[in-house]
Image (cartoon, rainbow, N blue to C red; front, side):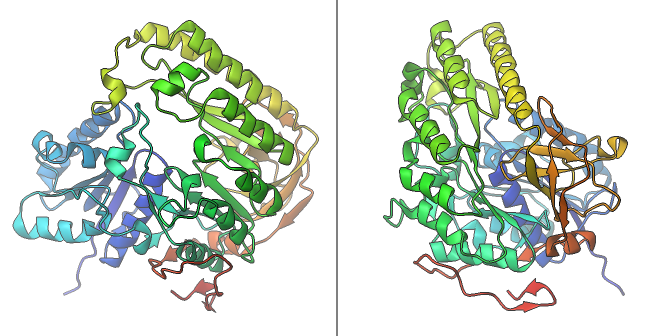
Length: 491
């Protein structure tokens, strides 16, 4: 009798950390013998990897779980699991509100998912397992990567900051740093499989090294990535202004494969509100960092996060934010209306602003930033840019007969491919002909097209799979090359 392979589907909400955690969950489930669900077929196992940052995160999850209730009733063997930040926060409340859920696991024990699913099937009852501290560093777990050409690499988890609006530290825990050798070995493993671009991830990425006592560790890590042969692009997200040091700016400017692209959260342009937020920098320091970055890298594209409507925000405070936006000349900004999160200090602050006031200020900020983005994009016209061809970036590519990808500075580029279309993962150089409000267009014949191993693997439908990296190496430098068999790294 032939055993039937069970299928899985992972639905991810939230930040890059959640997306990368979902790659780990996919690796775990496939190691346990499951396969990704095909097409629109119902999956045997549905996993929700949740976020708790925004106020509507709860409603979104419970609404989606409600839609699955009839499917679960019709097929009791179907399993539903909820993990991530909202699971860490709500814990047993999830099963109380949605008793058809089989497994609830937290941010500290994602490696437990296969065991919890088996236990739930055997015992025929929900399994809720939430740990208060990290069980194992996520990067020790296998991962099935989403992209053949670009990969996430966590360098730390958790956060030691105490921002009054943020619930993440209570859900992700204190900062834990990986050893440099482990990080570089994982980067090397991805490159051996054809990956051209890595993004170093941390809740507060540039405080890296605090756990092993090296304040300059992040800059050293960027320089070490520069010596890995075949690694063409290095990005990182998200840094904190309080930890942003001159040696990191120098490393960015002097390391050829580190992209001149910086995401630097501002949150507010009011010093009074920054203090209320417990953001341990002020606007003068923030603008000083921007000035130094631009002096070292005049072509740098700088993006940011901004919160509108923090409790007690006055019109004067908001004008301060608009002033910093004008001076910083962000290439784009992620703008948020303040969201009250139970369990955060800001939730109990007086002077919570009316929705209509917050909305009106938010609209003004968006207009200003859109004008700024459009102006900066128009300045790109006539420039030759290198584009890493991507999938899913251009929603209208089929009707416009274009392809899409990201320039080295992170800007989205829609380009005309020429007579022979490159593959996702290939690298194209092209001249910008039009700067739109949110993207660039290059409608001329490409200047050059370089085929890559990533393009070969993307064309073949092969995505990288990486085993957990647990070398524990303390030092910096280029890791020893991994042996390669048929284009794949031996793990």
